[in-house]
Image (cartoon, rainbow, N blue to C red; front, side, top):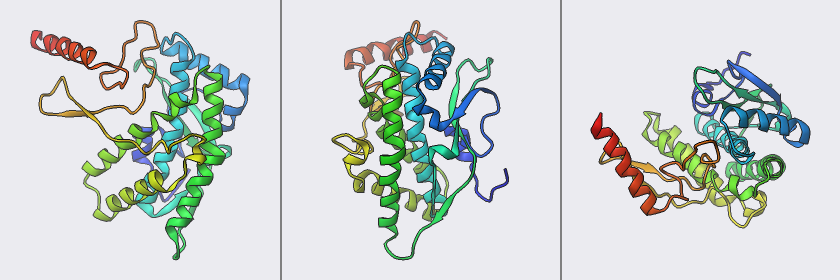
Length: 268
């Protein structure tokens, strides 16, 4: 598909593009989130690849791809000053898996590109209404469907949105982008996190409102890693352990893990 827009950034990091995945293990129309049997099959297949002990880990992976769609809209607003429509009926959900890599990537193929110009007057109001409708009509129902199929609380998915977007915001700030692009990203990030009511997400708080926290990088003294805003469930697999930046990890557990990592590094 030929397009005038550059999707290389979101294709590389978020696995969203007009071309789609290169190694498709399975795929379905994104509206398949509301087809219980089809969704169950996709969750099961993903869980088998990552040796998950139940559906919560693949469900977490599936749910956070909806945050990736939101971040893609943010990036599009920053790069082009346009709203990218990402309705599920215009997307194909894909499992990208290459056995040599050992883990799947989940993402979307855009089956059409619909970009809306911002009006000259009240552009922020126009964008805010698009965000409200996108969350109310697309993201929130899909989060609920995935959570139900995965036998978990939807909050487990929502709680991850803050740090996912925060990591991208931090990444954009470090890139050598034109100043106006970075400024637009920051502006629209604030709009998303501050102007969209919690009701659009079906919860008590906008999930993009999150206080950033950091921990010391155990591999590189003087560097810090951003803490996750919610657990990704990565320990729910055979032999699984919590991520070093998991908010469920206690300070004592993190200190012990840091000592283990540093001891292994010293022994090399």
